[in-house]
Amino acid sequence: MLLVNPSSPNSPQSVLQRVFGYAAFRGAQAAIVDHIVDGGDALVLMPTGGGKSLCYQIPAIVRHGAGRGVALVISPLIALMHDQVGALEEAGVHAAFLNSTLSLDKAQRIEREMLSGRLVLLYVAPERLTAPRMLAQLDSLHARGLLSLFAIDEAHCVSQWGHDFRADYLALNVLHERYPGVPRVALTATADVLTRADIVERLDLGEARVFVSSFDRPNIRYAIAEKTDARHQLRAFIEEEHEGDAGIVYCQSRRKVEETAAWLGSEGVVALPYHAGLDAETRRRHQDRFLREDGVVMVATIAFGMGIDKPDVRFVAHLDLPKNIESYYQETGRAGRDGLPADAWMAYGLADVVNQRRMIDESPAAEEFKRAQRGKLDALLALAEAHDCRRARLLAYFGEEAGPCGAHQNACDNCRQPPVTWDATEAARKALSCIYRFHQNGGQRFGAGHLIDVLRGKTTEKVEQYGHAALSTFGVGAELGDQQWRAVVRQLVALGCIRAEGEFNTLELTSAAREVLRGEVNLQLRQQSVQAKRSTRGGKKGGGRKSRPPLPLDAAGLARFEALKAWRADVAREHNVPAYVVFHDATLAEMAQRMPTSLAALGEIAGVGVRKLEAYGHSILRLLND
Image (tube, rainbow, N blue to C red; front, side, top):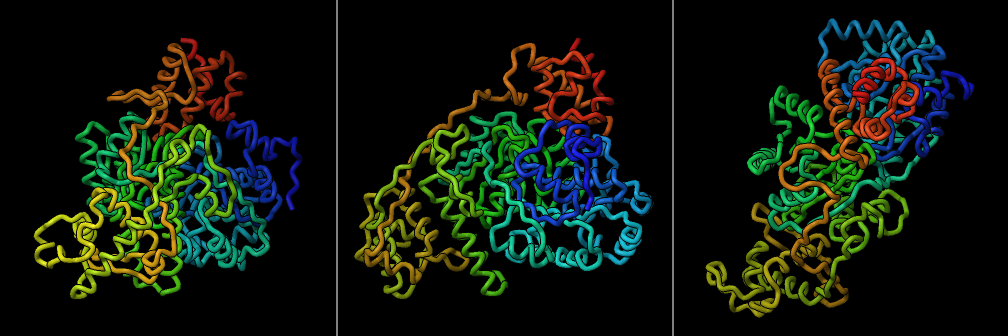
């Protein structure tokens, strides 16, 4: 056990203030840090942006200061390695990474630094950590008492039930067997109860203390819109809420990524595509622009985002339905990492439900796994179709109770404007009966478009070809419009009463349709409505590229804030790091607001550690004075 005097300059509290410039820990951070510093194993569940990295960085610094050597951080994310090593070096902490981007000479130099015990933190990928060469080096460090701790980031990757399983993580149980006494901390932002149990079993963390922070991200506002014209809905959302802001737009296919990015560009939005089909140089260039420039929107598949620490992403939008709630939660969590207001917006329609169900049904996975994936998709569909608080439903999925967000300043769309519902029981029975009549009339199956034409009594070429005007269900739904019927069909697919099959998404009934057809259940569905214009947070509309400051500033304060950002951009270019690695926007805004006149006063601002005060303090004071 490593006992550290709380008043020591090497205590966790001192390191938090001296290195990172923060006066106090948040939530469970202090308890987690103390537990790991004293040599305990831990499983940490903390939302994206909740401060997970400090939970292993501070123990690593404290234990290194006590002569315990280097901490190994295991992560599959090259972007996270680059970002965190850059930020640690800026803060005066000796850190490095070993990954495929390094030359042989540079990798060998870093290995020598590790073996000497001079490194505080080393970031490695799981496959490199378990390679014979690395294990031999770790054996040497362990024999000399110079292995400080192991931090296993993105720990959900070890679970077959998680949303991002990686086989390389399965070999990490070697750490428990080979290096007893070296504390291990597994960290993740997204894990339901089943995934947590899998993490504990596969990483041999049975004796570990489990820390579960609240999954609530109160600064994120959730909204799910009925998909009508997704592209124009997205453009209206950006124009009304986030003109000039950085954001991420997720699409399911590479083609849709490129088409959406090009279209947004034609509409005056600075938008870049990112997917695995682009060459490595293009991906690197686009990612660098997103990280280093203001107001860039990245349109991407899920290949983008993991490990991106950019704090000022003001929105995450989905133009296609994710696979499950874990994916949705992790992807939306990339917005508002700085704790300032951000939006999670999604457009969702019938095709999304059909596509996700088909991907599960057609996958080569075992039936047990498919059942689990269907259950996870059902939970996400329930969130999308919900009439009540989305935040409460999201938290309930992770086992956390919460009341409706109601008057919360970032309340979800359902709490801000409760949806109108209607009794759709008869409409549902008509739709299901019509599908049944198709089957009786020659055993044929048809898609949603033809079904709706028959229900509305439209005499089309296909209706005449198959004689469907003679069906008893022809025209029985004329009172509802096309969009209303699409909403009914979508929700029946979501509820599992209808299944879409084949290349043309033809519809067939499932066993769950029986109780609806018999009138044994009452279906209250969301009433289709014209999308209301969203209220803004005071942002400007129509083309300005300057992002809004995180704090209210007068004209002089705004001028100081912009001057500080320009200075920061120069420093970031000189050091070849993203601007937020130098200082976050919130730190610059506080400088602009308080206008400190001494180094002591500047050092009291959150995010200004000793190293940065020494390196930049005089320059900042001169700039503010000017």
